[in-house]
Image (cartoon, rainbow, N blue to C red):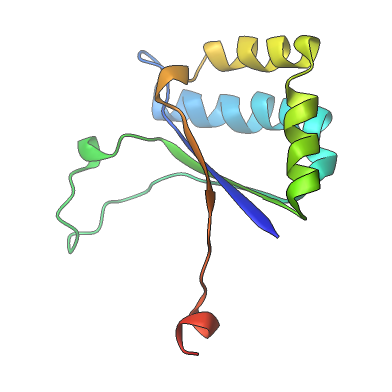
Length: 121
């Protein structure tokens, strides 16, 4: 299983509530329609209250959502990116993103995930 992590920041002038609503109600269905069949799982985590024990102020976060996409294997990941790069699909996704995402600030990477059970081995 491969995990893709995407850190996304909202466009200037978009409130956190507007960003979240647009992402969940418009962008997620768009993504699922075009590449969702490649996903084993697709999760979005929005930062909440900053914990006092962490020396980070809310303004210091440079993202508004952590998106996690799991795919079965490299072939599935390649297929996901192939579909997303079809010109008509890429244009539709980019057009939607332009309305609420700071696209220059998006960061995407593959993550190696370690859980509790693995940490104690």
